[in-house]
Length: 244
View 1 (cartoon, rainbow, N blue to C red):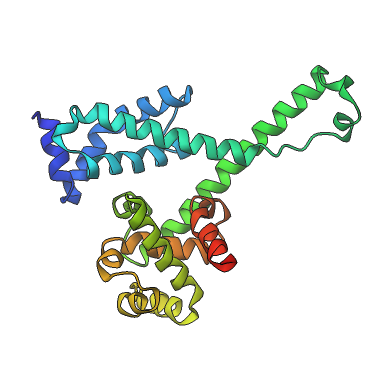
View 2: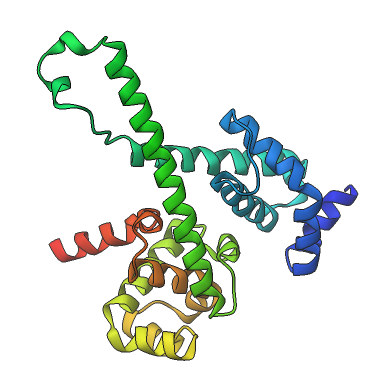
């Protein structure tokens, strides 16, 4: 086991070591993100935030049996960036064009029209990226009041499908209760005991994934439409339950 992998194992439980690990691997993460996206990435881009979250996820899930840490982390970063790019693509896919584009097929190859479409698509993508950064900054400010960071969420996110469903049930119960949400926001703590009683989700899951549940509840109960799309499964499960 080399020095990097020893540091990774220590960083799982030592925040200071994790910070040093991020600093020493910052250039590598940016280079990896640039290779995946095929453009130059800086730490002011959304892709840097995605890469940092993925790096944190890789640290928490790494075991020496998985081989080289950097190879493993690069795989996690690549997957998360591709998920992010697909989400961005969906946001910008509903592109408005001039009404003449719907008249007949004769304008499909019109260079001026194609240029207009490309410009509108690029503008939409830039607008979405800007709004995403704004939402992350706003959510960061909210979560700081609870004593943790937006970038801590990778560590507390549920991994197994069963745990994910349990967290989803707890989140739905929480945001459906005015009293529980008020208690959480007043005390800046997850009301674990009443939430466990009302949701039927075991305390162990609530305690282990406390940060994830708080963040998801604040996102879904607030004005965060872009971040909320990453939690769409919670709303979908609510609709399924209502239909039963």
